[in-house]
Image 1 (cartoon, rainbow, N blue to C red):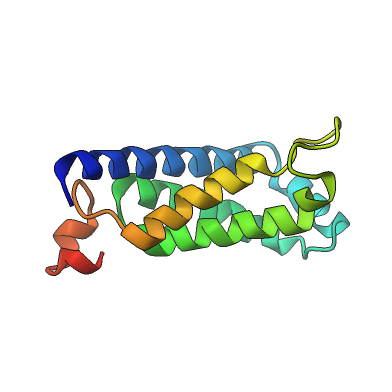
Image 2: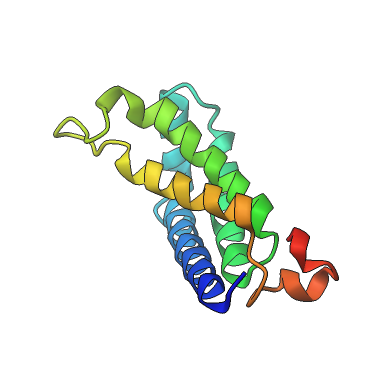
Amino acid sequence: MQLKNEVGVIILRIVLGVIFFIHGLAKFQGGIENIAGWFDGIGIPGVMAYVVASIEVIGGIALILGLGTRIVSALFGLLMIGAIIKVKLAVGFLGNGEMAGYELEIAYLAMALFLVINGSKKFSVDQFLVKNTNNI
């Protein structure tokens, strides 16, 4: 992959990592118990709030560093699919005036899928941990 493409990948990787890190951190700082209660209210076991927030925080840091880019991105993609199906689908693509639609989740999903497919070879911790960086 050309250097300019890799620079684009690192920008995408870092931006997505920061977004998820901040979302996860906000869940913990804002009262994860409230998020767990909300999860229960929409039919998802409350313990999943801790799982989701942990994936967002730890995965966000890992993605920023380029550690396990494909795996973390796949997890983020699954989170977005879950958010779209369970929360946002009912309000439509653009929302309903009370809640935003799922257009942003689709964008995050596309970013995550790009990283699952392409990985991040340069400027990542993975490049130092794996000898054959073509498979990262």
